[in-house]
Image (cartoon, rainbow, N blue to C red; front, side, top):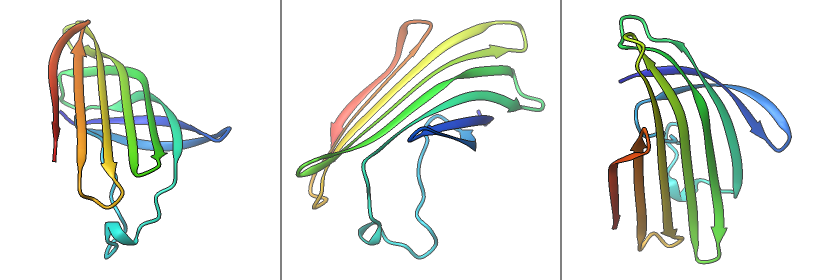
Length: 133
């Protein structure tokens, strides 16, 4: 499912417009030619207000909610967390409340990554995955 959303990012007291494309997992990309080792990672926290802009020909006719994203410096590792809490309305009028929690902990030397993903729909667990890499 591809959902285009208008979002307002609340970052350090500023409201910034953003366009989010939600496909289940939100990812970040480095500029062309950049390597992960070359990127400076800084702790930050952002909260996005989400609303559906359009979904022509799709079963989803409305969506709204918020996403909270945080990167923290945990001394020898980077910790990230992302929580998306969204209400989705289908063309038949069915409303689903979906929550997705994703957390990672990665050694700064890249030797270990721990992750956990939990998703619920209408307060029932639909996905729970955890592991190390």
